[in-house]
Length: 367
Image (cartoon, rainbow, N blue to C red; front, top):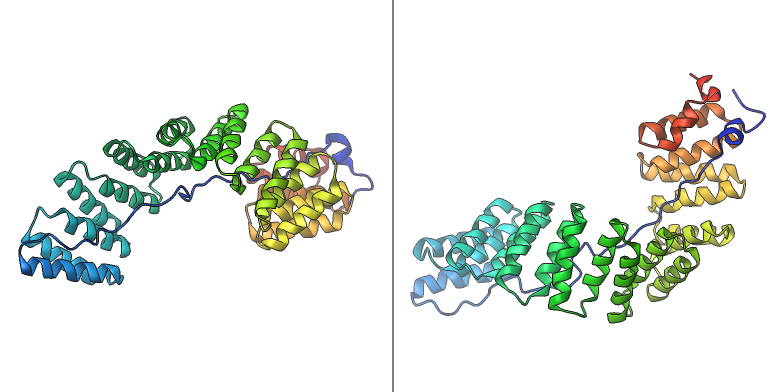
C-alpha cells in the first residue's frame, strides 16, 4: 500500500533524531604513575635476592608465569616481603588473573597500610574488568593514603562517572582540583559530570577553566560546544566545535557535533558537509550516517536519506533513531508498509516518537 499524500507527516508532524557526542577523558588521560617496583636491592639472603631478581627480570620481559613462580618462592621464604607480593600482583595482571592480583595488592596493604601504590593498582585492576564501583572505592583508598596525589582523586571521579554517580564524581574531581588547582583534565571531567546533572552554567565554567589551563585540550572545546547546544545556543556551539577541529583536524566527533549545531541553525549544506567529513574520517561512525539522513530529509532527498539510514543500521542494528528516520524517509517515498515496519522497530527499541506513528490509522491498516 502506498500513499498519495504524506498523511502521517501532515497529521503528526515529525522531529528528526540527531545525535551529538560529549567527549570525557574516561580513559584516564590525567597522567600515569610508576606501575612496577623493579628495585631488587636490600635483601640479605643471597638465595632470596637471586630469586627476586629473576622475578623482576621475568616481569620486565613480560614472562608472567615465570615471574609468578619466582615471586611465590620469595614469599614462601619471606612472607612479609611486600615488594614480592606487589610484583606478583603485577604479573597476575599480565596473565589477566584479576582475583589473584587483587589478593596480592590487598596483602601488600595488610603488611604496609600506607602503600598507596598497591591500592592504586588494585583500583586499576577493578577498572580494567569494568568493576567501576570497586575501582572507585580503591582509588579513594589510595587517595586517603597519599594526601597529595591528585591523580588518585581524578581516577576515582572517572570511575564514578562510568557508573553515572555524577554527584559523587563532582566531589572527587573537586578534591583533585583542590590538590592541583590547574588540573585541566579534572576541570573537563567535572564539567561533563555537571552537564549530566543539567548544571549547564557550571559545566561551561569548568570547560572554560580546562582550556584556560590547557589551550590545546581539544575535547574540552568539543564539550563546550555540546553544553552550549544543550543550552540551545547553537552559534556558540558551532564556534567551539570549530575550535576543537582547529586543534585536532581529524576529530570526527567534533565534525559530527558541529554538523548538529549547523543543522539546528538551518545550515543544511554545511551540516551535510560536516557529517560527510566525519564519515570520511571514520567510516564506521553510525551517528554521522543517521545525522546525514536527517539533513537529506530536510533537503527532501528521501532516497539518499534511506541509504544513509541503511548504513547506520548496518553498523548498529539497534540504532533507534536511524529506524525512526528511515521510516520518515520511506513514508515520504510513499512506502508506507516499509515506514510502518521501521517505526515498529523504533518503538520496540524504545522510541516514544514512534508510538504515535504506529498507532495511527494509516499504520493500523498495515497490520
